[in-house]
Image (cartoon, rainbow, N blue to C red; front, side, top):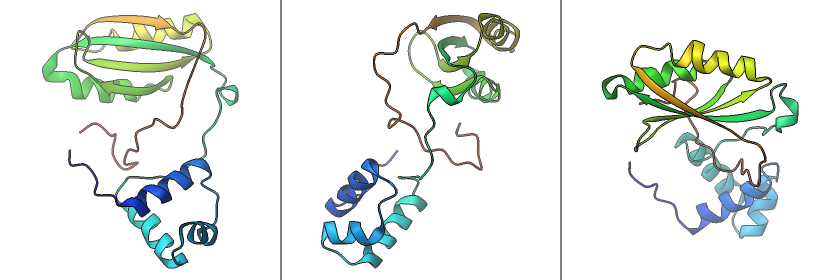
Length: 161
């Protein structure tokens, strides 16, 4: 994957928006010493290139299921992409990544109670054709969680390419 070609102005613009995405284009333009049209054009290009996106980040307190679990999955290499897509469609699963190492898929799940989590792991994921083994880890205390580290995916696709 080719690294995006960003100049200093793009980086400064992204840094400002990362702190407060609601700041006006006019204020950004004044702070950066450029005209408002330049800011508007740069933001539009960064969005079209999939480098930035504007969204409301919600806290875990808004979700009924506030317990976090991690699911490491060993799957048939030839079926990894399809299995990842299938897992991504499970409502309790919040993220799915194809990985290198002893497990080739990692998933993050939010659950309300252990019975529902067990149903997802044993009843759904382990039941998928091509899944050989899973291991789970339950988070007992979150020391740090940064919602700034998210991948922007095309909402028209499933993000698995």
